[in-house]
Amino acid sequence: MNISLIPDSPALLIELESQRILSLADLHLGITAELAEKGIELPSQIPKVKKRILKLIRAENPDRLIFLGDVKHNVPITSWQEWRDLPSFFSELSDHVQIGILPGNHDGDIEGLVPPEIIIHEAKGITLGGGEIGLMHGHTWPGPDLLKAKTLVTAHNHPIVEFRDGLGSRITELAWLKCRIELGKLPKKLQGEIKGAGPEILVTPAFSELIGGVAVNREMPEELLGPMFKSRAILLDESEVYLLDGTFLGKLKNLKKFAFQSFGK
Image 1 (tube, rainbow, N blue to C red):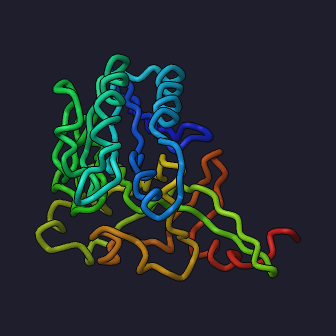
Image 2: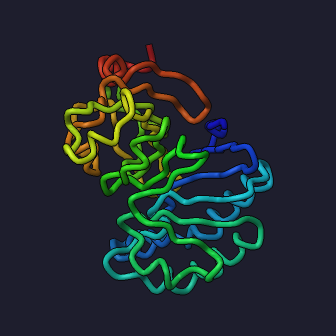
């Protein structure tokens, strides 16, 4: 079993004994309909996203593609663009690879937008590799089996790192987070499911190029979403931060010290 970050892409490759699984999250397809209501006219991003995913499929040759939630964007009502474009999007991808979806908080009506061969899993998550890997979106508490895994992959928060210089210039980069759990902050009914120190949490950046993200190196932990972060069960300051190209930026608590220093000096 091996988990590897695909260089320069917010995607993950999970290699089991008999399967290669491509995992990505937070596509937020249909977001352009919401932007149009705000006066921002952009073409549908669905063809572009499909092209990016097909490129990954050709490069990595996976047996399965698993979306970690928020495949679609609009809630509580599914937009006309989603009803029009998503069935063909899923149909074409399913011609190349077996697809599974772990629903996120934006995925209402997703069952009606996908062909029958696509598997819709429970929102509490699934395990792979004999229980060693857990996958979920992150807007709910994980199922008990996921807390027994060695690695728990989650999404939902769209992590980025942000730097500003003295003149206010700002740059941001998508980031992966590797975190640990503080067991005492979990609900008591889940604490008994933990083995040892619990799973390592791997937080996936968003695949969407329009959704934005949460700058984890700000002093704004209240922006982080989902019960594991809201409860402070995730030891965020001790998280390891990685850019998409694999650059290790160090622990988040140290990165925060330099977030607003000049990046031009």
